[in-house]
Length: 153
Image 1 (cartoon, rainbow, N blue to C red):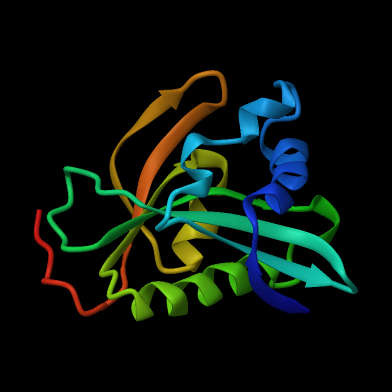
Image 2 (image 1 turned 45 degrees about the vertical axis):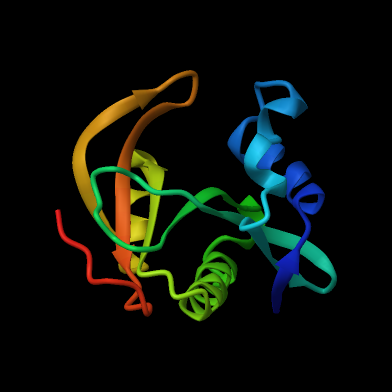
């Protein structure tokens, strides 16, 4: 397996197939994909892109940290789940984020994968909420120990 940075366009097919198959293809293309501080990570098995995630410099007001990044649009092809591709993507991104002095990574995770995020070291925050048209989500966060100021609630 090879994990590396990819461009936003490379993530769209897998995002659409896994995360938003009932929506138009454009629903998995975000305005923030090409921001200067955004980056995208992909895992490849035999040159096939099997897992992706995107990371954006975005602060959530609930967290008072210096440098926060948001994880968004994490998707792993169904036939490759359990092979470590998603974990590899997140670990690769965490190294990148630490180099950027980020001290917190957060996401709006589907409740159906909350336990997966917890296995990656994320903790839930707040109440479950509906994210139309996708369904129930919960905020998940993880301290990264970057060079930023220690955060507090």
